[in-house]
Image (cartoon, rainbow, N blue to C red; front, side, top):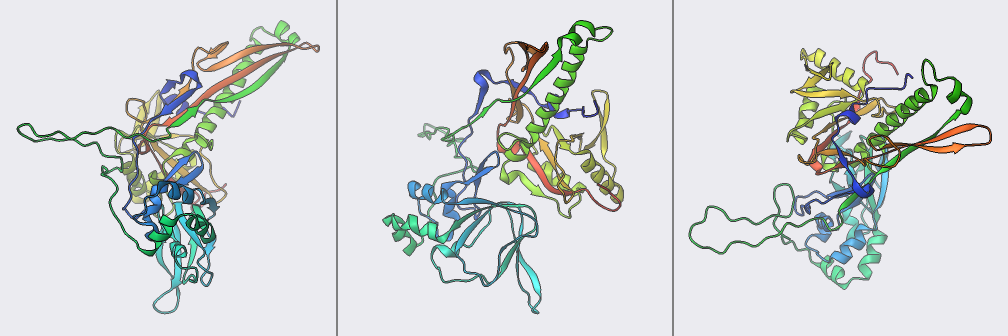
Length: 437
């Protein structure tokens, strides 16, 4: 079976028992109003703006009506753009607010000498078109074009006015902008825990509590299933020297495990590519994966990084870039294999990481383990008819054509405990020089 791969991700993830078929991740409440960038939450591939983060928009700065902000946040629509797509054209009316959830855009305008030039670059957390909230007569002076694949949240000004018309507080606020701090936060944007230290005598100690997210994420176990059908004649006669039922079951399980790893990477609900925090996604500097890019990724997951995960062609592209610079990556031995490493962190191959039609891919870096607040795999052992951990083979009976049926099921999921446990280097170009598809 040529489709069997090394499946390093399944071997390297610590697997945690998810009793009851679900695993809840309680995180400390995180938001940072006042840093000039909008923050989002993503559940799989679905992205939403944090209502309080709308306070970053100048027209809403200092406005704290949670109900109205939630109503506004619900009016934003998620849109995807491909590299090269024009998002707004110069001369069009400014009638929408755009929030950049992920990706990179160029603001194109007229340069000093009349030629087209890039005036600025917008990336994760940026916003534009916010003037539409207070002035409906403006037009775009510049165009905005996607440089990479982009995810934007868009709200028409008409939707904003509908909400404003129902809120006297918002209408009053739009007449006078004001700003005030909401509450103390630590450098990571988490609600601060008040602590006294270095004091003498008997001062009053601060009271505090750990503020958690109001709606914690629950990861439910997913399932991959198939029905193995074997004729009873095969089971009765063709079991020497090799048991044919056993061999067919073995290859069926191999296929399920391959699908399991694919889902852990690509599933839009729990896959790692879709569950990395938007602040933990960065882009390459020049396209190809360079040592500088790998160092930048390490700076995103600097607390005890466990391993990189990349497509074999991406690893080859990184090797070419290192060779062109006269840099030679480390190598380490693990489970009898010699693997490349960078700064002592191993780089494992995974052919489930997709390669786009434009020959770009991604590199993942993660910290693993429940105690380390890292990335973990989820399964449930002890299920009925268990053949392997969290995988069951259930006899379904024999039909009138003497076909024996077995239901083969694998249960699994993955969870990212805290955002900085997983970082992704996006838009990694692997087609250079004579590289072929």
